[in-house]
Image (cartoon, rainbow, N blue to C red; front, side, top):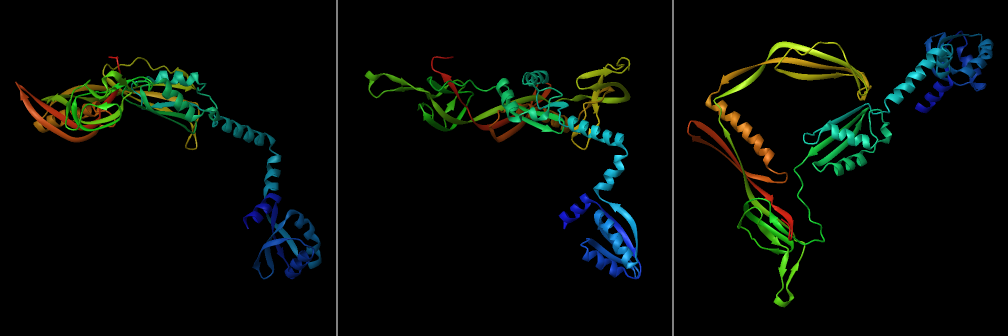
Length: 397
Protein backbone atom coordinates (compact mmCIF):
# COMPACT_ATOMS: atom_id res chain seq x y z
CA UNK A 1 0.00 0.00 0.00
CA UNK A 2 2.77 2.41 0.90
CA UNK A 3 4.65 1.71 -2.33
CA UNK A 4 1.52 2.34 -4.38
CA UNK A 5 0.91 5.68 -2.65
CA UNK A 6 4.57 6.61 -3.11
CA UNK A 7 4.32 5.79 -6.82
CA UNK A 8 1.25 8.00 -7.20
CA UNK A 9 3.03 10.82 -5.35
CA UNK A 10 6.10 10.59 -7.59
CA UNK A 11 4.01 10.51 -10.79
CA UNK A 12 1.60 13.20 -9.55
CA UNK A 13 -2.18 13.10 -9.27
CA UNK A 14 -5.20 15.36 -8.85
CA UNK A 15 -8.17 15.19 -6.50
CA UNK A 16 -11.34 15.83 -8.50
CA UNK A 17 -15.01 16.27 -7.68
CA UNK A 18 -17.42 14.85 -10.25
CA UNK A 19 -21.02 16.14 -10.17
CA UNK A 20 -24.03 15.15 -12.27
CA UNK A 21 -26.86 12.67 -12.58
CA UNK A 22 -24.66 9.97 -14.13
CA UNK A 23 -21.59 9.84 -11.91
CA UNK A 24 -21.68 6.03 -11.96
CA UNK A 25 -21.56 6.08 -15.79
CA UNK A 26 -18.50 8.36 -15.62
CA UNK A 27 -16.75 5.84 -13.36
CA UNK A 28 -17.72 2.92 -15.66
CA UNK A 29 -16.41 4.68 -18.77
CA UNK A 30 -13.10 5.41 -17.00
CA UNK A 31 -12.83 1.77 -15.93
CA UNK A 32 -13.42 0.50 -19.49
CA UNK A 33 -10.78 2.90 -20.81
CA UNK A 34 -8.35 1.67 -18.08
CA UNK A 35 -8.23 5.07 -16.40
CA UNK A 36 -7.26 4.41 -12.78
CA UNK A 37 -9.45 5.96 -10.09
CA UNK A 38 -8.88 5.46 -6.36
CA UNK A 39 -10.12 6.67 -2.98
CA UNK A 40 -13.58 7.18 -4.48
CA UNK A 41 -15.82 8.88 -1.91
CA UNK A 42 -19.43 10.06 -2.29
CA UNK A 43 -19.95 13.58 -0.93
CA UNK A 44 -23.61 14.16 -1.81
CA UNK A 45 -26.16 12.11 -3.77
CA UNK A 46 -25.02 13.90 -6.94
CA UNK A 47 -21.28 14.35 -6.37
CA UNK A 48 -18.27 12.10 -5.80
CA UNK A 49 -14.67 12.90 -4.85
CA UNK A 50 -11.84 10.75 -6.20
CA UNK A 51 -8.17 10.72 -7.10
CA UNK A 52 -6.86 10.33 -10.63
CA UNK A 53 -3.41 10.41 -12.24
CA UNK A 54 -2.31 13.36 -14.37
CA UNK A 55 -2.48 11.33 -17.60
CA UNK A 56 -5.76 9.79 -16.51
CA UNK A 57 -7.25 13.24 -15.92
CA UNK A 58 -6.48 14.23 -19.52
CA UNK A 59 -8.18 11.08 -20.82
CA UNK A 60 -11.19 11.52 -18.50
CA UNK A 61 -12.51 14.52 -20.43
CA UNK A 62 -14.17 12.20 -22.96
CA UNK A 63 -15.81 10.23 -20.13
CA UNK A 64 -17.11 13.46 -18.59
CA UNK A 65 -18.56 14.59 -21.90
CA UNK A 66 -20.28 11.27 -22.61
CA UNK A 67 -21.71 10.99 -19.08
CA UNK A 68 -22.68 14.68 -19.04
CA UNK A 69 -20.89 15.19 -15.74
CA UNK A 70 -18.95 18.19 -14.57
CA UNK A 71 -15.38 17.60 -13.35
CA UNK A 72 -13.72 20.12 -11.03
CA UNK A 73 -10.17 19.96 -9.69
CA UNK A 74 -10.09 20.30 -5.92
CA UNK A 75 -6.30 20.09 -5.50
CA UNK A 76 -3.11 18.99 -7.22
CA UNK A 77 -0.74 16.65 -5.44
CA UNK A 78 2.65 15.06 -6.00
CA UNK A 79 6.22 15.77 -6.95
CA UNK A 80 5.62 17.17 -10.47
CA UNK A 81 3.52 20.04 -9.06
CA UNK A 82 6.10 20.82 -6.37
CA UNK A 83 8.85 20.95 -9.01
CA UNK A 84 6.69 23.12 -11.22
CA UNK A 85 6.36 25.68 -8.42
CA UNK A 86 10.09 25.82 -7.75
CA UNK A 87 10.97 25.82 -11.44
CA UNK A 88 9.84 29.44 -11.52
CA UNK A 89 12.07 30.23 -8.54
CA UNK A 90 15.45 29.05 -9.78
CA UNK A 91 17.36 31.39 -7.50
CA UNK A 92 15.52 30.09 -4.46
CA UNK A 93 16.14 26.47 -5.45
CA UNK A 94 19.82 27.20 -6.10
CA UNK A 95 20.05 28.80 -2.67
CA UNK A 96 18.53 25.74 -1.02
CA UNK A 97 20.96 23.45 -2.85
CA UNK A 98 23.96 25.59 -1.90
CA UNK A 99 22.77 25.71 1.71
CA UNK A 100 22.29 21.93 1.77
CA UNK A 101 25.80 21.41 0.38
CA UNK A 102 27.28 23.81 2.93
CA UNK A 103 25.45 22.09 5.79
CA UNK A 104 26.69 18.71 4.55
CA UNK A 105 30.26 19.96 4.35
CA UNK A 106 30.06 21.69 7.72
CA UNK A 107 28.72 18.58 9.42
CA UNK A 108 31.35 16.35 7.77
CA UNK A 109 34.22 18.19 9.42
CA UNK A 110 35.61 18.21 12.97
CA UNK A 111 35.25 21.73 14.33
CA UNK A 112 36.09 21.14 18.00
CA UNK A 113 38.58 18.89 19.82
CA UNK A 114 37.82 18.21 23.50
CA UNK A 115 40.37 16.58 25.81
CA UNK A 116 38.84 15.13 28.99
CA UNK A 117 40.25 13.46 32.11
CA UNK A 118 43.87 14.61 31.93
CA UNK A 119 45.76 16.33 34.74
CA UNK A 120 49.30 14.97 34.43
CA UNK A 121 49.57 15.04 30.64
CA UNK A 122 49.18 18.59 29.35
CA UNK A 123 46.29 19.25 26.95
CA UNK A 124 48.66 21.10 24.62
CA UNK A 125 50.87 18.01 24.37
CA UNK A 126 47.92 15.82 23.33
CA UNK A 127 46.77 18.43 20.79
CA UNK A 128 50.29 18.55 19.33
CA UNK A 129 50.36 14.76 19.05
CA UNK A 130 47.00 14.84 17.26
CA UNK A 131 48.41 17.44 14.88
CA UNK A 132 51.35 15.13 14.15
CA UNK A 133 48.75 12.52 13.11
CA UNK A 134 47.19 15.05 10.74
CA UNK A 135 44.19 15.77 12.95
CA UNK A 136 43.26 19.44 13.36
CA UNK A 137 40.14 21.52 13.59
CA UNK A 138 38.81 21.34 10.05
CA UNK A 139 39.80 17.70 9.46
CA UNK A 140 37.24 15.61 7.57
CA UNK A 141 35.62 13.16 10.00
CA UNK A 142 36.03 10.06 7.82
CA UNK A 143 39.81 10.52 7.90
CA UNK A 144 39.85 9.94 11.67
CA UNK A 145 40.38 6.33 12.76
CA UNK A 146 39.40 6.33 16.47
CA UNK A 147 41.21 3.06 17.29
CA UNK A 148 44.43 4.17 15.58
CA UNK A 149 44.32 7.55 17.35
CA UNK A 150 43.77 5.88 20.75
CA UNK A 151 46.59 3.37 20.21
CA UNK A 152 49.00 6.10 19.07
CA UNK A 153 48.26 8.30 22.08
CA UNK A 154 48.76 5.33 24.42
CA UNK A 155 52.16 4.60 22.86
CA UNK A 156 53.29 8.22 23.09
CA UNK A 157 52.15 8.80 26.69
CA UNK A 158 53.26 6.26 29.27
CA UNK A 159 51.27 8.16 31.92
CA UNK A 160 47.98 7.12 30.30
CA UNK A 161 46.33 3.85 31.29
CA UNK A 162 43.38 4.20 28.89
CA UNK A 163 42.36 6.39 25.94
CA UNK A 164 38.91 6.62 24.36
CA UNK A 165 38.29 8.42 21.06
CA UNK A 166 34.80 9.32 19.87
CA UNK A 167 33.54 11.47 17.01
CA UNK A 168 30.29 13.01 18.20
CA UNK A 169 28.64 15.34 15.72
CA UNK A 170 31.33 17.84 14.75
CA UNK A 171 33.36 17.23 17.94
CA UNK A 172 36.30 14.92 18.46
CA UNK A 173 36.26 13.82 22.10
CA UNK A 174 39.47 12.39 23.57
CA UNK A 175 38.80 10.83 26.99
CA UNK A 176 41.87 9.70 28.91
CA UNK A 177 42.55 7.96 32.19
CA UNK A 178 45.86 8.56 33.88
CA UNK A 179 47.44 5.82 35.97
CA UNK A 180 50.42 5.38 38.18
CA UNK A 181 53.80 5.04 36.54
CA UNK A 182 54.05 1.48 35.24
CA UNK A 183 56.70 -0.75 36.84
CA UNK A 184 59.85 -1.47 34.90
CA UNK A 185 59.34 -4.71 32.98
CA UNK A 186 62.37 -6.93 32.53
CA UNK A 187 62.60 -8.54 29.06
CA UNK A 188 61.55 -12.19 29.17
CA UNK A 189 64.94 -13.33 27.89
CA UNK A 190 66.72 -11.84 30.91
CA UNK A 191 66.82 -13.47 34.38
CA UNK A 192 65.11 -11.61 37.19
CA UNK A 193 63.79 -11.87 40.75
CA UNK A 194 60.31 -11.01 41.96
CA UNK A 195 60.67 -8.49 44.80
CA UNK A 196 58.25 -6.66 47.11
CA UNK A 197 57.26 -3.15 46.10
CA UNK A 198 56.15 -2.36 49.68
CA UNK A 199 55.93 -3.78 53.20
CA UNK A 200 53.19 -6.25 54.06
CA UNK A 201 52.12 -9.69 55.28
CA UNK A 202 51.89 -12.47 52.70
CA UNK A 203 48.41 -13.82 51.95
CA UNK A 204 49.28 -16.15 49.07
CA UNK A 205 52.18 -16.96 46.75
CA UNK A 206 51.91 -18.27 43.20
CA UNK A 207 55.32 -18.98 41.65
CA UNK A 208 54.94 -19.86 37.97
CA UNK A 209 58.68 -19.75 37.36
CA UNK A 210 61.46 -19.45 39.92
CA UNK A 211 61.80 -20.41 43.58
CA UNK A 212 59.35 -19.02 46.17
CA UNK A 213 61.22 -17.73 49.23
CA UNK A 214 58.20 -16.64 51.29
CA UNK A 215 54.97 -18.29 52.39
CA UNK A 216 51.57 -17.30 53.76
CA UNK A 217 51.85 -15.32 56.99
CA UNK A 218 55.41 -14.09 56.44
CA UNK A 219 56.13 -10.43 57.14
CA UNK A 220 58.01 -8.82 54.27
CA UNK A 221 59.69 -5.49 53.66
CA UNK A 222 60.00 -3.37 50.55
CA UNK A 223 62.72 -4.68 48.20
CA UNK A 224 62.79 -8.18 49.70
CA UNK A 225 63.16 -11.05 47.20
CA UNK A 226 59.91 -13.01 47.13
CA UNK A 227 60.47 -15.36 44.21
CA UNK A 228 64.08 -15.97 43.33
CA UNK A 229 65.30 -16.20 39.76
CA UNK A 230 68.33 -18.21 40.92
CA UNK A 231 67.65 -21.92 41.32
CA UNK A 232 70.35 -24.01 42.94
CA UNK A 233 70.98 -27.43 41.43
CA UNK A 234 70.66 -30.53 43.61
CA UNK A 235 74.17 -31.37 42.45
CA UNK A 236 76.59 -28.59 43.48
CA UNK A 237 78.94 -29.31 40.58
CA UNK A 238 76.30 -28.12 38.15
CA UNK A 239 76.04 -24.72 39.86
CA UNK A 240 72.96 -22.48 39.88
CA UNK A 241 70.53 -21.75 37.08
CA UNK A 242 69.22 -18.23 36.44
CA UNK A 243 65.64 -17.86 35.18
CA UNK A 244 63.11 -15.13 34.56
CA UNK A 245 60.96 -15.39 37.69
CA UNK A 246 57.23 -15.13 37.14
CA UNK A 247 54.59 -15.09 39.84
CA UNK A 248 52.05 -13.32 42.01
CA UNK A 249 52.38 -12.48 45.69
CA UNK A 250 49.22 -11.21 47.35
CA UNK A 251 49.79 -9.42 50.64
CA UNK A 252 48.02 -7.38 53.27
CA UNK A 253 49.24 -3.79 53.12
CA UNK A 254 48.41 -0.64 55.02
CA UNK A 255 48.05 2.99 53.98
CA UNK A 256 47.74 5.82 56.49
CA UNK A 257 46.91 9.53 56.34
CA UNK A 258 47.15 11.91 59.29
CA UNK A 259 45.31 15.26 59.28
CA UNK A 260 45.04 17.98 61.88
CA UNK A 261 41.49 18.69 63.00
CA UNK A 262 41.02 22.40 62.25
CA UNK A 263 39.40 24.78 64.71
CA UNK A 264 38.33 27.13 61.94
CA UNK A 265 38.21 27.25 58.17
CA UNK A 266 38.47 29.94 55.54
CA UNK A 267 35.59 30.07 53.08
CA UNK A 268 35.31 32.11 49.93
CA UNK A 269 32.05 33.83 49.02
CA UNK A 270 30.92 35.94 46.12
CA UNK A 271 30.50 39.67 46.68
CA UNK A 272 27.86 39.94 43.96
CA UNK A 273 30.16 41.88 41.64
CA UNK A 274 31.02 40.35 38.28
CA UNK A 275 32.93 41.30 35.14
CA UNK A 276 32.77 39.74 31.69
CA UNK A 277 35.44 39.29 29.06
CA UNK A 278 34.06 38.36 25.64
CA UNK A 279 35.75 37.14 22.48
CA UNK A 280 34.50 35.88 19.13
CA UNK A 281 36.20 33.00 17.36
CA UNK A 282 36.38 31.06 14.13
CA UNK A 283 38.24 27.77 14.44
CA UNK A 284 41.44 28.66 16.36
CA UNK A 285 41.30 32.37 15.58
CA UNK A 286 40.06 34.46 18.50
CA UNK A 287 39.30 38.16 18.54
CA UNK A 288 38.84 39.63 22.05
CA UNK A 289 36.27 42.39 22.29
CA UNK A 290 37.19 45.57 24.22
CA UNK A 291 36.30 45.08 27.87
CA UNK A 292 39.02 46.74 29.93
CA UNK A 293 41.10 45.15 32.69
CA UNK A 294 39.92 42.67 35.30
CA UNK A 295 39.18 44.84 38.38
CA UNK A 296 39.22 41.96 40.88
CA UNK A 297 42.18 40.57 42.83
CA UNK A 298 40.34 37.53 44.23
CA UNK A 299 37.87 35.87 41.89
CA UNK A 300 36.59 32.70 40.31
CA UNK A 301 35.94 32.23 36.61
CA UNK A 302 33.25 30.41 34.66
CA UNK A 303 33.63 30.02 30.89
CA UNK A 304 30.59 29.98 28.60
CA UNK A 305 31.07 28.86 25.02
CA UNK A 306 28.17 29.72 22.74
CA UNK A 307 28.19 28.39 19.18
CA UNK A 308 25.40 27.74 16.65
CA UNK A 309 24.28 24.11 16.63
CA UNK A 310 22.48 22.27 13.84
CA UNK A 311 20.21 19.67 15.40
CA UNK A 312 21.59 18.29 18.65
CA UNK A 313 25.12 17.28 17.66
CA UNK A 314 26.46 19.39 14.82
CA UNK A 315 28.25 22.39 16.20
CA UNK A 316 29.46 25.09 13.78
CA UNK A 317 33.07 26.35 14.02
CA UNK A 318 32.35 29.91 15.10
CA UNK A 319 30.80 31.51 18.14
CA UNK A 320 31.32 33.59 21.24
CA UNK A 321 33.34 32.77 24.36
CA UNK A 322 32.45 34.59 27.58
CA UNK A 323 34.79 34.52 30.59
CA UNK A 324 32.66 35.53 33.57
CA UNK A 325 34.67 36.69 36.61
CA UNK A 326 33.00 36.70 40.03
CA UNK A 327 34.64 38.74 42.78
CA UNK A 328 35.26 36.81 46.01
CA UNK A 329 36.01 37.66 49.60
CA UNK A 330 37.42 35.40 52.31
CA UNK A 331 35.71 34.79 55.60
CA UNK A 332 36.89 32.74 58.56
CA UNK A 333 34.35 30.75 60.51
CA UNK A 334 34.76 28.77 63.70
CA UNK A 335 33.93 25.08 63.56
CA UNK A 336 32.35 22.93 66.21
CA UNK A 337 33.97 19.57 66.90
CA UNK A 338 31.70 17.56 64.60
CA UNK A 339 32.20 19.95 61.69
CA UNK A 340 35.98 20.01 62.20
CA UNK A 341 36.19 16.22 62.39
CA UNK A 342 34.10 15.80 59.24
CA UNK A 343 36.29 18.29 57.36
CA UNK A 344 39.49 16.49 58.43
CA UNK A 345 37.98 13.10 57.58
CA UNK A 346 36.92 14.15 54.07
CA UNK A 347 40.38 15.57 53.39
CA UNK A 348 42.12 12.45 54.71
CA UNK A 349 39.93 10.02 52.78
CA UNK A 350 40.45 11.94 49.54
CA UNK A 351 44.22 11.77 50.00
CA UNK A 352 43.99 8.10 50.96
CA UNK A 353 42.07 7.21 47.78
CA UNK A 354 44.85 8.78 45.72
CA UNK A 355 47.48 6.75 47.60
CA UNK A 356 45.88 3.32 47.14
CA UNK A 357 46.99 1.81 43.79
CA UNK A 358 44.55 0.59 41.19
CA UNK A 359 43.78 -3.10 41.70
CA UNK A 360 44.21 -3.04 45.47
CA UNK A 361 41.14 -4.15 47.45
CA UNK A 362 40.32 -2.29 50.67
CA UNK A 363 39.30 -4.88 53.27
CA UNK A 364 39.22 -2.69 56.38
CA UNK A 365 39.36 0.96 57.36
CA UNK A 366 40.08 2.43 60.80
CA UNK A 367 39.59 6.02 61.95
CA UNK A 368 40.98 7.36 65.20
CA UNK A 369 41.38 10.74 66.90
CA UNK A 370 44.51 11.52 68.91
CA UNK A 371 45.69 14.57 70.81
CA UNK A 372 49.23 15.88 70.60
CA UNK A 373 50.02 18.94 72.74
CA UNK A 374 47.41 21.58 71.86
CA UNK A 375 46.27 19.98 68.61
CA UNK A 376 43.97 17.13 67.69
CA UNK A 377 44.65 14.81 64.76
CA UNK A 378 42.53 12.39 62.77
CA UNK A 379 44.23 9.27 61.41
CA UNK A 380 42.63 7.14 58.69
CA UNK A 381 44.21 3.73 58.06
CA UNK A 382 43.18 1.44 55.20
CA UNK A 383 44.05 -2.25 55.14
CA UNK A 384 44.29 -3.63 51.61
CA UNK A 385 45.04 -6.85 49.79
CA UNK A 386 47.13 -6.36 46.66
CA UNK A 387 49.74 -7.93 44.44
CA UNK A 388 53.06 -6.50 45.64
CA UNK A 389 55.25 -8.40 43.16
CA UNK A 390 57.49 -6.46 40.78
CA UNK A 391 60.38 -7.64 38.64
CA UNK A 392 64.02 -6.82 39.30
CA UNK A 393 66.74 -7.87 36.89
CA UNK A 394 69.38 -10.05 38.50
CA UNK A 395 72.44 -7.91 38.94
CA UNK A 396 70.33 -4.72 38.71
CA UNK A 397 69.53 -2.27 41.51
